[in-house]
Amino acid sequence: MKTPKAPIFLFACIVLAATLGCETVTNLISPPEPATPEPALATSTAEQTPESSATFPPEPIPTEPEIAPSAIPTQDQAAVIAPGACEEEVCILEGSFVLKRPIGPEYRNAIDTTSRYGTLRRGVRDAYHGVQFLNSTGTPVIAVAAADVDAAGDDNQVDYGPRLGMYGNLVILKHDIPGIGEPVYTLYAHLSAVSVKAEGDVETGEEVGLVGLSGSVRGSTLYFEVRYGENAYEATVNPELWLEPLLDGAGNPMGALAGRIVDPEGNFVTVRNIRVENLRA
Image (cartoon, rainbow, N blue to C red; front, side, top):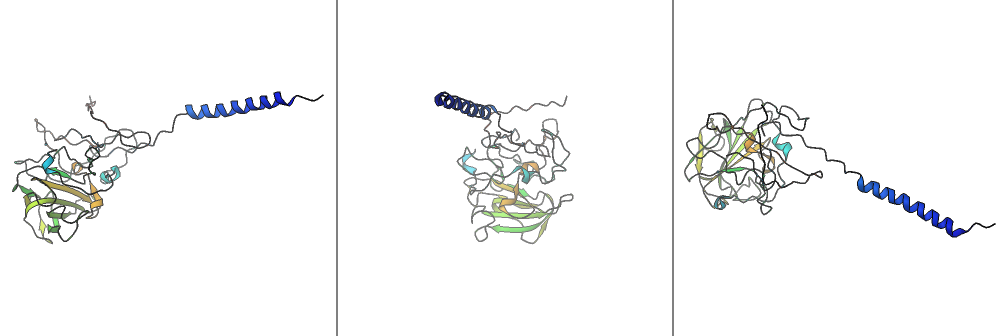
């Protein structure tokens, strides 16, 4: 007796559809593998997410240096002086801020919080490679540590950044800091006057120039960079992780916070409000 072919064919289709359906559902309900979290900064801090800033000391629009396109400074760059990798989700490691501030305490020595290192300017501008100290023209600019003068003058002939004429009058110092295996360079830009000569040397706190508005800037400011390992625009690190902290009303150092917030795919997440609480107690 011949077996009807139609019911067998229909049964096979049902089995095949059920199998494929199960695989599809399995794929839909399986959670994506979480991205491996990056280690937290080993010094005191929270690297900026685009369009956000940490709470630490003054967009004045007139004083923004125009920075050419480049990659966003990475967390690894800022962690070069870390005593060890952070293997936990949150960890606190010992460290120190090894550089003095380039503006004395009798002037405005707080970093401008509207254009911090890595700031993206709501996607309109590229990431900043340094920080600003907003002060009047003629305010003394001082060396953050003892150093050799690597460069002094202007950048009309030599490009110390992505293009000529960006920094204006500048000074670049080379520091050999105890406990740090690589040379550290600091750059002071937009000066109205340069007070040192190339191939000379300076002591900590010695005047190297005066605040101005030379180069591609539209207001009086000191633009300051820290470069680690080599005197290169691509070698910048976050100055807030190197400069000595400001003091609070009771005279205690405030330190700094730096970090980033990303989604499971590693994309930056915009956070407009961050609440920081002291859970030490």
